Length: 240
Image (cartoon, rainbow, N blue to C red):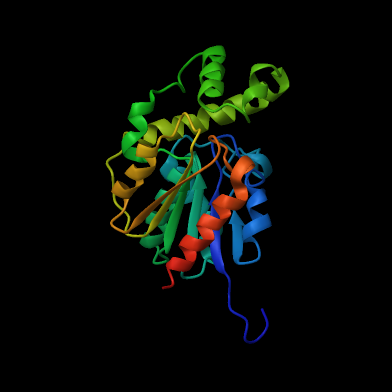
């Protein structure tokens, strides 16, 4: 950047189960100008498809830190959608342990750790039952798995590993973080309730703000600009 220009705040973006660094690229339409966006790919996903899948949120967080931690600046924020919010939460802990604390966390369409057990586990189910439960809970993006065998063959191992990571994280003792949190959910999301969003406040000693916008679980497709607006307003409030 040229002399006199302010350095943009970094926003680290963690995708949902089965997603990749390309899944949340639409955020760039609204956030790329005011922020520096850093996208994460998990092992076994997209650009890292040849690597071994991980089935643990702490492992996903530490792997992410190993890859990008060295280029993070003070004051960065983390954002995760669904599973990604749990990885972001764990990433905050890893960052603090390495002396590079995050300044806040954004959780989109996500159930916090203490309420995962209420969802009921399905990662262990046989293929047809697993796919059926997945499509029932998260209608939309995963629907092609029920009808397209090629898509199913590619995504099934990735999704099973990611859902396993999600479910197992709910069995870990809760360790609080000390950063502000913004929890955003869709009014029509059948898998994440308003009470789930409120419960993100129990994950941190910092202030937690809760917002709901129109849409289902994959609400960025329907209300991306509104979600981005909430993120920007919340991020600006951290500087006041």
